[in-house]
Amino acid sequence: MRVDFYQLTRDPAELVLPLLARSTLGAGERLLVVSDDAAQLDRISAALWQRVPDGFLAHGHAGTVHDARQPILLASAPEPANGARYVALADGQWRETQGMTRAFLLFPPDRIDDARGTWRMLGQREGVERHYWRQDGGKWIEGP
Image (tube, rainbow, N blue to C red; front, side, top):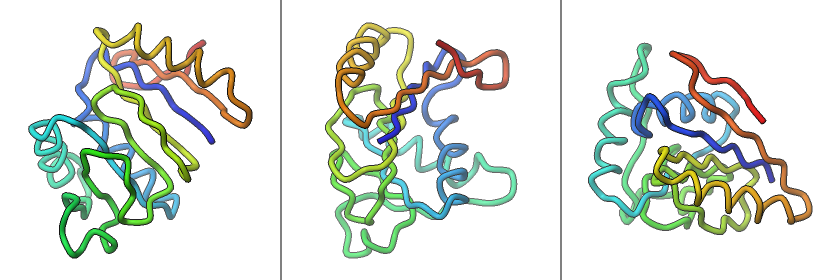
């Protein structure tokens, strides 16, 4: 499993997620976006409609009869009812992600200690590849 840590120093998760979602869909994958914050999920939903210049990204909130059809599913728990193998943890809180092949952990500066703990914990697991990304102006730089 690959885990990408995104330290959000400039943009909030709702501005970063549409770009990750577009790349995920472009790779032929589905995405599960997880947050305990319902208001954050609503902001992410709005951004998925408006943020990408060449169109909206089809998505839905978990808990409907159409969950399985959604290429991007917004949920409060890491349960991929849409069959996603990629998960974005938008609220900065690590959750176990059984069956996922890739995870994006987006965290603000005030959650850096939690992210470091998660980094160390995942480093002790077999088969986990970790990457750290930070914002540098308007672009993402992979760092140590």
